Image (cartoon, rainbow, N blue to C red; front, side):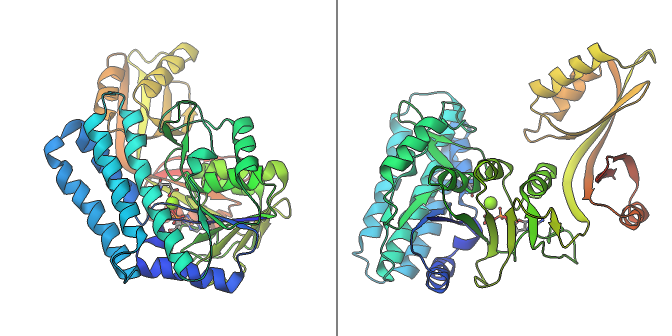
Length: 416
Ligand code: ADP
Ligand code: ASP
Ligand code: MG
């Protein structure tokens, strides 16, 4: 059996959905399970609904209209027959959304977020499943919440592998072509959970693992895994083969083309991951497996923008030692900062951070009670794997360097 995953970019409009038919007809759809994620940027749009539900109820109708209009414009383009069951299925999901918002008494934001944001995945898969059926690609829509089981850590739920494997093996008939959702799952009480943003690659990895699949293919709007993020680097090169470990490293440092958690289950069973272009399905793309580390052997560039760089020293110029560091890290944890790089010297401690929850002011207020803190905002963190000296010179030439750190195969440079 094989598993395919189509991401948001592949189904961002009606043509994207039509293109899935083209891809499947070109590469075949025997013994396959397909994970499809929310259309385009719909997860962001549903996040706005969840926020408004909590904070600005008067803005709810505008945000709900936005997601309704987006989906209805796609289904209207795809389905000429306005009596098609896809229309009532989607309406049913929207009624469920409104019903939930009226009846809900829970005050836990994360719980509510998962119940709301998951609708985007359900709508998307309903549309794709119906469209494929109409295009002679017979398939069965399945609710992934019957398959992937997690704990109740809403928004970042942990997979219960035993239960998940059992459910998947029981529910999935390898002879049927299934269309299912990524990113969402359910807990013991049957409530919807989510696996963390961008989690649908991971969902596909979970299916591949539990089904002992021959391979997992994720279809992207790029040729495969490139040696640099094409949004920020002009000249990029396709990586034809990378090892799981190299892919995990690249994902860890922020190569956002693969979700980091996806790789572990595949590596455990030696299931190859193929990253291919949905625009050129016959092209080979990238092959991730136990094989060679990196083909071609070339430096790989990763950039994380919009970072914070803090330099922290004691007010009395004493050394920054263990108890200070543990205190500082507790504060990072408290203010949900993501630490991307640290460096310690005798009297100062430097950190490159990501402030995903907009809490830097509170953190700085607290830190400066005890420490002298210098903060640089909007800095970039460049990581170069398998670097050559000329790569470093190039980065240094064009930017003001705040910090540079080497390990054997990797250099990280924070620049302003
Ligand atoms: P989807 O959600 O549709 O599955 P993503 O948008 O999450 O796809 O991932 C694909 C995008 O990842 C590409 O369009 C590209 O801009 C970006 N990207 C970042 N780093 C890389 C890289 N090293 N190689 C290829 N794409 C990359
Ligand atoms: N739709 C979800 C998100 O945007 C999951 C995914 O696409 O991977 O985070
Ligand atoms: Mg994505």
